[in-house]
Amino acid sequence: MTPTPEHEFRLAAEPLDDLDAAVLAELRGLHSDADPLPGDLLDRIKFTMSVAHLEAQVAEIVSESDLAPVRGTDYDRADTVTFARDGLSVMVTIEHGESPRADVAGWVSESDVEVELRERGRTRTTSTDDDGRFTFTGVERGLASFVLRRRSEPDAPPIITPAIEL
Amino acid sequence: MQTGAGSESLAVRAADAFRAFRDGDPSGMSTLVDDVTPLLWSIARQQGVSRQGAEDVVQNAWLKLVEHAASIADPQSVLKWLITTTKRDAWTLGARSRREEPGASEDIREREPENTAPSPEAVVLAAEAGSVVWTHFAALPQRCQTLLRAIAFADRPDYAHVAEALGMPVGSIGPTRGRCLAKLRASLTADPRWELST
Image (cartoon, each protein chain N blue to C red):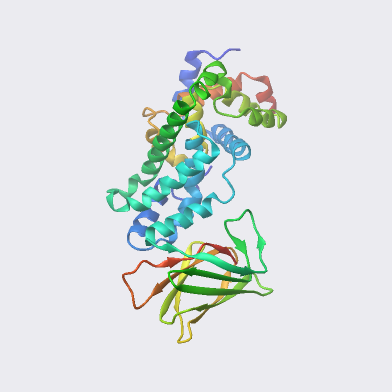
């Protein structure tokens, strides 16, 4: 049977029902399979938004050890990573214990720097000690980046590191 | 049903996260990006841009939201703002690439209308998976495909909002089924393979 315009018109005026929900759910699944979001798009969007929001300068990765690339080259799993920007360098060492969480020990080339850890959906902040050291314990595994602000230059743009996988 | 107790619509969640963001708490934006990006991706791709082009368009829409945060008067309109920005920029990009490659995409599309939305590979994939829904979806008019693909990535309370942001007339969908979903429903119902699979 060929659907008639009257039939369609009647159908169009009916409220949405469970069968519509099932059809839409199937459409969603089909499109997700046939044309999926690029794997790292969400992370790149969030990083770009952070940089824009903070009007931050992005640090470069200058060295890393024990790296095993994950999903492309935008970020890497590494045990020790060094970032640098504008004469400031920061070395971050990640200690993966048995637990699903990791500890982060860092060292900044200057003292009196505020360090903010940006994890998925939350942030926490600490300061470097007199030797430029800082720690974050019990950090959830996943992508994280660090935002650094020199306390002596509160109006200068902060420095943000590319996201690394903890 | 995607509207259980406690789960607000996308538009409401977008408004809340954006308001908090503007008040100095950016933590909710991460979840919002997770929730809304698949919808924006669908809209960009339905305008006929490449995957690379859609990546740029969607990423830029979010970036513009941050840059124009101060000028968005009503947080309730943030979802709509993201949708219209994505659609407009994707359309512009698509128009530009069609102009730069005269005769490339537009003429082929005119001759082979079935190639407009689901790619040939996707149709093959879906056919192998035995998807009756895909076959009938691919036969819908382009604007209906755009609407339904977007709706599929939104929550039910958002349907009318999404349709309006896409420039579809009021009543295109929600609370009633609307023309596009009715067309799909009618052709599915008329297909004996569909009867078997439900």
